[in-house]
Image (cartoon, rainbow, N blue to C red; front, side):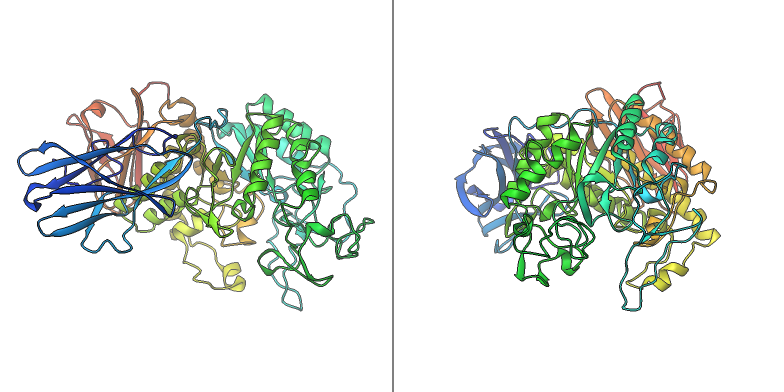
Length: 627
């Protein structure tokens, strides 16, 4: 029996479900108890914040003896966001429906501040790259993945090099309490190339590199020159060699584009006087002066989050725009080398005009180049720069880093309910165009977050500082439990809509709190080989399970401690079940899964179609015999 007044993720209430293109006729149906004496039902629609519709719905029949249907069609006229709700005129007064977290309807007698449902309308010609769908990403912090024996040339003398790959990272501040991020382990591009076979064994199809351009910190987010590879990483030819060698193995490389700010120690700003260029800090006559926002030249200027070593750029300045997005600009120069595309740092701090131009530049060199943005929230309805952003409507980003899924996965395994998990995932699927969803960067840890293993098994930091974080190591008991939870987290990560992204070393059991402890060198010689073997099995799953690249997400009802969902693409299916609890759970499977065996993970399916799932275990079933 249908228990809902309205549910935006149920076809009997809304068809089609999810994001649509302009002039799509969307059927909306509300199911009202007959006893309410409903005399009229109205659809209310806002085009973003502007009211545009207050229209009649029509009585369309009974649902059994106790409920009736009211319905209408709505056609969005142009790209953008539409927010809608329903107003019922009943014997007891006017009632307004509002969106609950899971997409179902709550009921309000006042209608004040009640959340509306969202309808995303994207460009009809919106196309995203095909090559990444169904693949596996791998994120590398270049200084910390692998070091070759290649001699380094032109490396500045003020860089402090660790003697051993096994050293701990430097975390202490200087006498003024400042952190310089100037310790290096010497990881380089050739070191990455030498380990491409290892990455291939994990099923990797896309290699995402944190910044590689010349910069004077180990993280390289303070760009010194966009047109040179950092000499400690190698040369432009080393980059070309990596791209070409990776391509032979079916792996494409994407780079980190850091365009909201530069370094103060750069060709463009040149506060430290390292370069022979005339930087903006040195003279208002500098060709780069208008790139930056000086309040009082030269010492007072806008900087990223107040860090004076990261002067903010005026991205819409014509000279900067041409330098980055012009015909001979940075984006086109590196893309034509064979890059798979760009991950854009703090994309929500880049103005629309700049994002529009960058997309055009990248696609001019390669229509299959991906443009992927860092946005931490639901990117479909984000506000920044004082207005609604349009990242995902077809003119800017192809997809985004998927922090909402990461929060859902880690939150569930740390004690959240399966209902909360399914609602979080289903909301993103509902709001994002399908072209975007299939390419979501599904990570569970990055260079900006604690290691997933630490999140799952360690004591929460609760804002405690670096001295405390530096002293923490998982106990043997914590680590054992954490490794089991990592299997569950990665199973969810690899089966959800989008593309799983492994943060280097997570597959080897790396642990650590936030920067810089999450950026330690890859543990070559100390890796957890059982966990690596598990990730290799997941990589194989991505290759053979035909429902994963673009299949629908279909949550199944289970106990709070168990997440179970299907991915469906026509007749192709995958089922993923995860039990985070300390007790075994039984899951009655739909009849279509009777007679199947577990392909990956634990548990068994009995003759009655019941999946018996052990504690802290998962089960993945696929509908073909290729695994």
